[in-house]
Length: 167
Image (tube, rainbow, N blue to C red; front, side, top):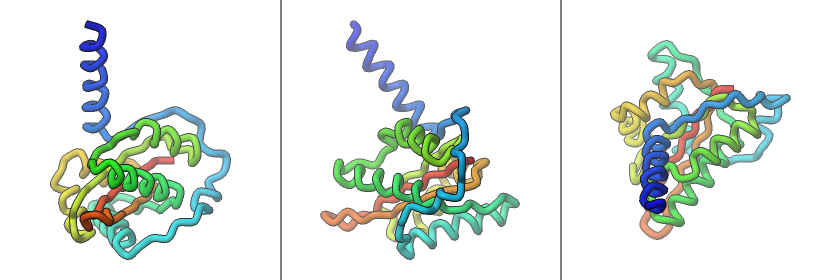
């Protein structure tokens, strides 16, 4: 009986987390935002192209551009590596990932988009725009973001994780 209740609760939490892909917190902002990009991260051309697509789209609908934060891209890369290692596409550990980002960079809100096996940045971006939840993140009340695109060496499939934050 308890096991069934626990399973039901875990399923509800998982579905709720995957559907919203965002988290809010009243945590205090980091004391200084000058160190937000101090973490080293080398962006590949697909990552830069995806960030440009997102920002160009946001500007086209009257929204602000998003500034990249290297730390958030590192967290995105970690999630890509997790998905590759486990051969899954999901938002596992999103709550822990967003809480970490809130603590480190002082984010108030965090959202996440993931994608799998799109050969181009444009194709992944178009798929996100076609999905109401992912589109809501792209159009959301955010001011910073990070992204990582990694390739599974076993099959060549690309994994995308794009994290949005409001500081």
